[in-house]
Image (cartoon, rainbow, N blue to C red; front, side, top):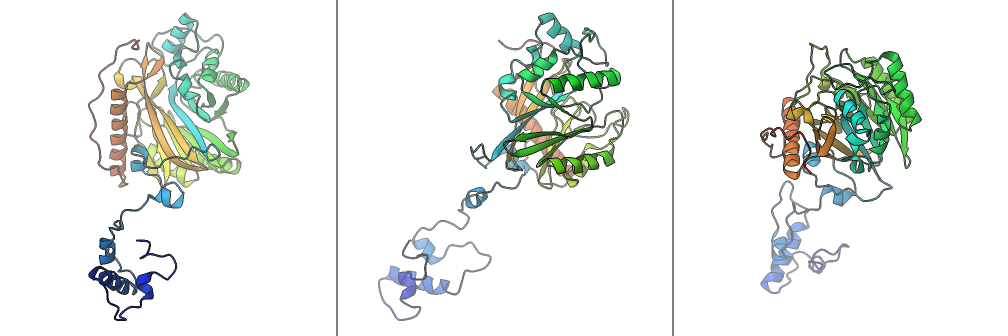
Length: 412
């Protein structure tokens, strides 16, 4: 093979000259004929092997290294690459940054009651903390004000608050930024918002959603976090555009979190009755168009599919993380997303499914339930992609049966 493909003009077959009457055994003649025929250049639009390639058992033209191997650059983001990755992310900390995102954290009502009874405000986070604190940045959606003197009651209520000592649990699970742009943070008015923001900041946790951009520098790459609430009112799109522009000035990677969409749905849709009037898909697309690098969604209390729009990732809902919604299997489920950046480019994502037990403690699912959850998430992503005429995964999976309601207490 090397004699036929010398890198500089002088392979033996070429040096003999085309049509010079050289003789030899049949194989040599065939090789010479192939070299002469190839001298005119390759045939356009064909992948058929030439006689020479067949004789020396050359690989097919399609037998090529992957794009990432050939170029040293990650492939373009796609649903196929997200759910069935082929790219091996380099184990080079100088290039890699990881962003971990949870679903809704509402340490109120039953969660607050049981943590108080147990005298343990780390309790909700204990089974998952070793995982959640292992990213460069852990970004949570805190949907409850935290302050000393919060009333302790497991009774049904939609006015939420949690004990100030839950901030120790947030530190324990590694939270670096807490999004406060949601519909329950204001349940105790401006005083509750101010107390929560001051509590978090005093414990080293930055906040998004109150105006300023939260900026964290991870080994020279700056992440900027902003948040917006669209539950109970329309999202201020002018504020979104201006916020992204401001974050773009301060950070290399702009992360935008939205509280949006109809509750208890697998697809992102508006809910005129609440009102939650904005279509999450439209808002997510606008955020990318205005300069966001990744869009994070929460509020529906069910995990939903994801979308790749113009090469950027939109996650529509991560489900519940810490909450007492034990009344259905679906509201007990959520995913922890880990989003991996190579420099400033998102190159991989993974989702770790959890299920809540005992009215407030998420525990990682077993392998079978995890596989079912991720298949549901992929199918939901493909349903959305089909509706939007975007590429799906291949083959498109069927929705698996819903998981049965799990026991109230976590397995030993």
